[in-house]
Image 1 (cartoon, rainbow, N blue to C red):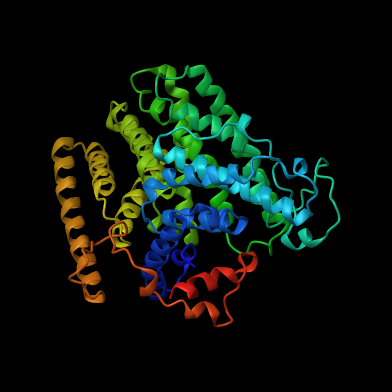
Image 2 (cartoon, rainbow, N blue to C red):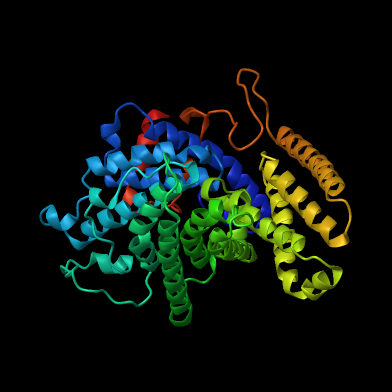
Length: 452
């Protein structure tokens, strides 16, 4: 429920569930962080941990520190042997094998995404595991005790596991890319960057082709664009981050011009995700990997715009290129509005909005042949006034809804809320017959009841 709250169309219900999600996330974090880890070394425990790390990013609760927790999750999975393919671990039913494979590749995905955001290297390489990617089977097919031959290629027909299978095929390449992007001691040779970029671009093209195939043959399987946007985002952000530092140098070093083109293409593709109404809701409230459109993509969009305008020597050239540049200008304006909207949805870091506002001011000044310095100062001042008004409004709204406890230091914002205890939360709604925890089993509810 914490992961899905931000996707709800009803603004009032979304706000209510997001407020409750903060307490749920803190309680779950307390459970996974308890000293006796053996109680949580189970498939169910790892699944809950995965959902928790995703919920922290979706709800922006310690999202920038998920890499630390992902390391703990990875070690727990290795301790349980998930890094070894179940075919090497004795007789298992198909359901058990596929659960282990799906869970391992989910943990790998969380790990590589968190590593990219934190600027750290992933804690695992392709030499550290031999678990094969999950099979392209629907959940109901896993109940069949027939032993599938996993060495044979499975059907390419779309299933609910197709997107994880698609991500799993590129996870080794993305692990390598994250190591190159976050290299500590020395900058990798540019030839290697180009080679990795071409491989990542090929993966993105294959993903797009697979997504188009899914849309054409299985229209009822996924009723919205959300899963397609999600899959595209998790792929293309690696291409953006790989080329970003070299694209920034392209204006002074033409050798890096390839990165400028490839990075801008990836950035514009990510900006287009804002057109997906449901996925946009996630991008408005999410932290961690859901903020890279602003932290990385916006930089390349404005860098390209400013470079183009500064290289146009006459008003005639600017007028001639106006129509060609208009889509890029529209994307830039959308980024400014998106940054402001994030503030209304609870973002407390105003730097991104101030930056894109100043960059937009510089672009407008160049287009109107006015002073860029004055325009940048004016845009910075106006954006700070807007931020001040939004933050004051948000604080007043929170204070009107929350009864302040004088014994607890409470903060305003997603990452600064009071830590609730289990006694503060009513879990009766879990037993009303409408909640289905599936594989988690009834033990999940009982353990809370025992402590209340």
